[in-house]
Amino acid sequence: MKAFIRSLGMLMVLSGLAFLCISCVDYENGDAPLPEMTPAQQAERALLQTMAIEPGALVSFVGPVEHRTILESAVSDSPDISIMVPWDEGPHCVYMFFVNDHPDQRYEHDVRYAWLNMNNRHFEQVGAHWWPRLSEWPIPSYTDFELIRADFVSGVTFYYGRGGGNGFPPTYLPAVEP
Image (cartoon, rainbow, N blue to C red; front, side):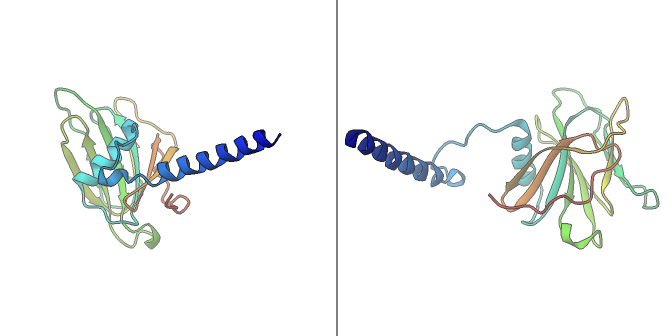
């Protein structure tokens, strides 16, 4: 019985040490290879490398989307602001982003719509005043934005989902850094 308890105690100590070693790995500084990332997580990091986004921002995004997909203002009395994924030739893997740099200020500031082609890093952004509505091509979507996953990267909250034809919700639960 003593041998069993001693073995169990040793197993618990070794498990705790293994957990501490794994949790102390600094992936950002190259101490270890990054764990396998999903395409959506790759898009998050690519956007941060392409666009200046300050910590505290909230980014909602969908993708990959088809050519000619449009993000347009969801508020009908706002100026006609939109951004469209252009028709281009070659490989195509485009994500569309709604960037709210100050989610706590209730649209008393500008927001941004953007798209990013993951294959060639072509990118475009436009300033806007309200949350967007997604118009997918060739058939418009009239579905709500459906959250698939949330990530917190470099102080920026990312919400990845699908849909959004009825408009992206203006806010979600506040982000909590892991």
